[in-house]
Image 1: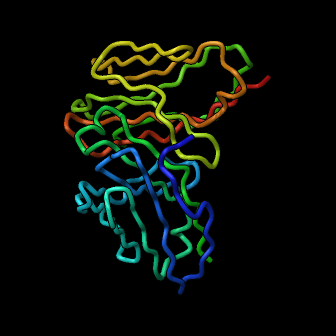
Image 2: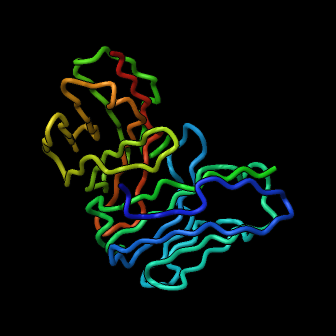
Length: 116
Length: 111
């Protein structure tokens, strides 16, 4: 079983809705990541938090707003999304940014988002 | 040209076959090489990782890296229907914090 927990597993929202995706890990990891994955495509990095501070934003549109309330939690706030934002959103964590070079990036099962 | 090229398949093999999955890359700075397995509607899970060149074996899985050719492989021996999944290669530079993924190869093992 994955030690990175994501909720909800499925989310359907309209273009005017505001919703949030949540991610939690209890492995003591200090780096957390949001990835977006479209069908039959590899994961694409969106954001990286290191020690609760945003360290990487891969030029993601402002309708996606990440938040890291503490070292165990990562949220992704969604507002005014477009149908093309429908995808699997994956949370991941690693011990710290340096350790990701050892491949120790643990993924959650993802939240499948559908925007109508 | 993409940094990492991977044939998306699908690759269909009979149970018990030896499977060979491959990726090529263009960035000679890549030092860390990983293989992830992703079942349908699940997150990727790390199978193997290798630093620089060489082989690494774990059970039925063997990872090979040939940096001179910029080519990596994952071999699966005695393949099982439960191995049916998408296999993603991923790479990183020294002290990097951004994995570069291949497109993923869909593998189907028929019983």
